[in-house]
Amino acid sequence: MVTAFIFLLRMVRAICGLYIIVFSFGLVLLVAGAAVFPVHLLAASAILLGLMGLLLSVFFGLRWLVNRVYKWKYGGAHPVLGHRRWAL
Image (tube, rainbow, N blue to C red; front, side):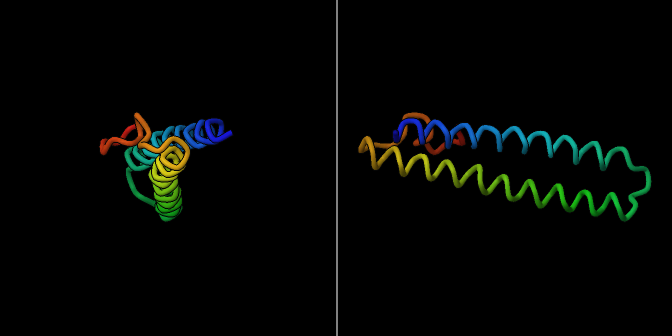
């Protein structure tokens, strides 16, 4: 059961990572495509930045949660997410 929960958390984390990449690309296209930066594009950029901030907090928060659950269940750090580097 815990292994399935860890797998589910890692899948949600992977989806958040993909959305972060998509939102970053969309924001770059939005800014690069506007010769003059109208107010509605500024609002769209603010919304995309807010969503990216939320997704980043979920992305790194789930890493912490997966490490906690894995450590509770198996007694040690997760083999991939337990390292200090930013692993998916």
